[in-house]
Length: 140
Image (tube, rainbow, N blue to C red; front, side):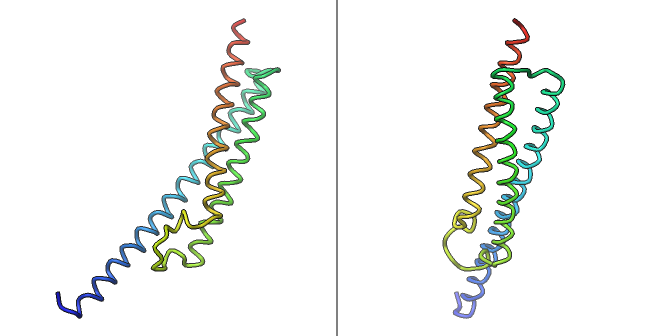
C-alpha cells in the first residue's frame, strides 16, 4: 500500500466510526422515546381501569398506584435521558477518536437510562400483580 493511501484509509475508518456512533445515538433516542410513549399509554390505561372500577380497593389499587408512580418515573427519566443524548451531540463527544463508547461513557445517559428501564420493568410487574389481584377479587 502506498504511503499516501494510508491517511485516506484512516480517515475512512474514522468516518465509519462516527457514522456508527451517530447510529447508536439515534437507536438510543428511538428506544427512549418508545418507552416514554408506552409508559404514557399505560398510565392512561391504568387510570381508566381504576375509574371504571375494574381495579378496586386493597392490594390491587395499591399496586396500581405504585405502577403509576413508577411509570411517571420512567417517563421523566426518559426525558432526562433524551437531554443527555442531546448533550452528547451538542458537545461533539461522538466526533472524537476516543476509544470509549460514547453512550456508556456518558454517566448522565447511563444513569437515566438505567432508571428508566428499571422503573418501567418494575411498573410492568406491579401492573401484572394488580391485574391478577383484581381478577381474583372479581371471581370471588
